[in-house]
Each structure stands twice: as structure tokens, then as C-alpha cells.
Amino acid sequence: MSDVKKLAVIGAGTMGSGIALVAASRGIDVALIDVSEEQLSKASSYHAKTMDRNVKKERMTREEADTALSRIGCHTDMSDASDADWVVEAATENADLKKKIFKRMNEVFGDGVVLATNTSSISITDLATAVPDAADRVIGMHFFNPVPIMKLVEVINGRGTSEETTRRTIELSEAMGKVPVPANDHAGFVSNRVLMPMINEAFHAWSDGVAEPENIDSIMVLGCAFPMGPLRLADHIGLDVCRDIMLVMHRGLGDDKYLPAPKLVELVEEGRLGNKTGHGVYDHS
Ligand code: CAA
Image (cartoon, rainbow, N blue to C red; front, side, top):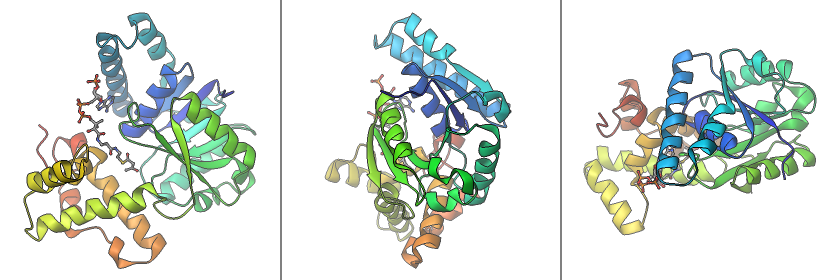
């Protein structure tokens, strides 16, 4: 049982909006915060569409769906959510930006509020240096995309994280219907240390002419039983996110094998970021 009544989620992108929906569906009030009204409006459309589907599939009644949706409040100013008792930061994968957000979170939210991050690769101990007086309440809570479907929360302690914060993070993850699994605080943790080099290698295979994207993906789906091939998965995650995670691992682990593949970087620079922009490796329009 978790004692969390109100969750603040910072960032209404793919991950933040998914985390907000899952929490609200499990009876937790949510304040979803983003500086962009447009991003908040996209998140609300996603919430409504996903709940409509759940009602249509008879997973919940219309009333239950509406009750869950009514638990989510959208705000552009973090201070509007200062009564939350837990915060999950889900902003862009950039350590400097996240540290700035953590400083602000520490100003806005009171003592005792856990400051969690949905980072996919950045060191929790490093992020905690932004809020030295609150390091015991900083923890990694790494969700997976699509959040309503994927069961895992990778739980990562920083050097200063208290046992109480870890215990409460496990309780909250379970209350959200997820399975928390611990990993240590190394760049990329477990999930992306293993997944991203595979995705990156698929870009190398494509640019080396080993096969076209459709065939690279078919080979991995049919031969290795992946639910989607690595290049389609990269589009689903966001090519900018994949590049940024590789860069964090390159910096953190100091090995050139983690350099993002030139083809991946090229697509990101062209603005082909995957599903979210309608075009990545594949055309999603
Ligand atoms: N939100 C809510 N529900 C979603 C969804 C989303 N974004 N995407 C798909 N679904 C639902 C669909 O509505 C559908 O539900 P129904 O039972 O109502 O039909 C169900 O999931 C299955 O979807 P589809 O039939 O469209 O397609 P599918 O069977 O291929 O499943 C998938 C889609 C779940 C995404 C599946 O392809 C899959 O598991 N892919 C791999 C995902 C993965 O590996 N995620 C981890 C990425 S790594 C990460 O997130 C961490 C990081 O740090 C980068």
C-alpha cells in the first residue's frame, strides 16, 4: 500500500503523460506540469483516447474512465502543484536541464516529498548534486513506453538515497500496477545498457547496407521473437531519445562503442524523430 495521494509529474511528453494516466487510473490525484500548453493539450487528447479505448474494450466503465480523467489537472507552473506529496520528473534526457528542474522541485515541494526522476540513463547521484539537502529523497523511477502497457519500473538508488525512499518507491510502483526491479547507478542502468547498443547497431547495419530497415526489423521479430524490430522500436522511443541515451553512456562509460551511429544522428538532425514527428526511420504519416 502506498501513502501517496497526489503525484506531480514534470513534463507532459510521451513518458510523463503515460505516468500521469497510470497513476490516475489507480486512484492517485495527478498534477501534470509542462511549460508548453500545446504539450499539455496533446497529453489530454492521449488520455481521453486511451480511456475511450478502455471503455470500448470493457476494461472499465465510462464512469470509472471519467473519474480517472477528472483526477488529472494540467498546469504550466510547478508551484500550482505544491500540495503534491510525490514528484516524478520526466523531462528531456539532458543532465543540465534535469538539474535545473530538480533545484526548482526542491524549492516548490516541501520536506518529505520524494523527488523521483524518470531518467533513462543519467546518474541519480549526479542529479542529486543539484539538491544536496534532499539527496536522501532523490531516486530513479524508470518507466517504459508505452507506460500503460509495460510492467517494469527500474528503481535506481543514488549514493545518498535513503532506505525509506526506496521502500516507498517500491510501494508506489506496485500501487501503480507495476513491477519494480532494482538496478545500480551506472550510465544506462540495465535496460538501456543492453537495449540501446542493439538499436544503435541496427542503424549501423542499415547504413552498411546489410539490409533495409523493414528486413532488419522482420529478422529480429521473426527470428528473435521481439514484439517490434529495433528500428521500429527506435521510432517508438524517439530517435532523439536514443541518441541522447547513447551520448550519456558514451560520456559515463568512456568507451567509443557507445557513440551514436552516424545514421541515427543524421535522422535526428533532419528532425525525423520517429512516431512523435510522423517520420523517423519509417514514414508514420
Ligand atoms: N498507450 C496505451 N496503450 C497502448 C499504446 C500506448 N501508447 N500503444 C499500444 N497500446 C495498446 C493498444 O491500444 C492495444 O490495446 P488493445 O488491447 O486495446 O488492443 C495494445 O497496446 C496492443 O497494441 P497494438 O495492437 O497496436 O500493437 P502491438 O500488439 O504491436 O503492441 C506494443 C504494441 C505494446 C507497443 C508492442 O509492440 C511492444 O511491446 N513493443 C515493444 C515496446 C518496448 O520495448 N518498450 C520499451 C521501450 S524502451 C523504454 O521505454 C525505456 C527507455 O528508456 C528508452
